[in-house]
Image (tube, rainbow, N blue to C red; front, side, top):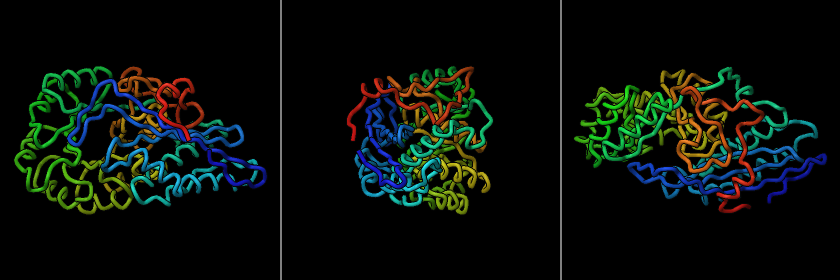
Length: 374
């Protein structure tokens, strides 16, 4: 437990809960197979007013940080700064959207800042009795959503794609890799009538996988997402110049600077924006709006998180007129969602319109998937 500094009798406590969430079915990508997701839930208590945030983490080394890396970032600076900021405000004033994200630099710091940002935002909204949608000026009550198909055999890929579209998905991302070939992607394209994206997860090598890239780009895909390493905008720009398929970026989108550079170097026409990579809700909304002003299309990306974070993604995706994103409720991909976010209705994902950012985890459900609490 972290006890915040006191001023004018204001006291804040924080608890961190790490949950192990099991996926209904494995999702194989080029870099790893997703079977579990470790989510960190940050619980704040401001003299009886709760605030919750969630951050899904990586299962191993990569672009996104692990549980231990995010927890280390919280301990290092981010959580102390946030609690101090809350505890030092005058009595009776509601906590405002925090400036914690400004300290972020490393991926773990960005994720930790995004986690604290969400918890503080949720705390303020619950104190005021308002929803995140109301706070961000969203008038929509539901949003379109996309679906993900992992690397599978062609028949299994087509069946999964058809099931997602039947649920309401209006766009699909199909995971691809240099050695997977194109048969599964072709099967999905033949099976459904919605736009299909080939998601490479940075698995291709510039100059080394040209033949495989040419096969992918010869298909009628909506765009090719993140073929090369996250920091190699030059290679993405060169590919975009020589192929007729739009290029998307996901792992590369880590700050407003990267958004501007993607437009400046013509490295992509589509961006995937994630609060855990950008440092929080406000920075993600700003990234979406900046990208739109620069002529880039965007969508809000997910990471197989529980219902609390998914509710946030859904609301953000309704702010700036984005492409359908990874915002569908977890009931379709998790064995159990401790937050119980309501699923799609009529082919659309309802937004969370109750006070707060999203449904907090239910205590008994959280205990069933809990790994540790600090």
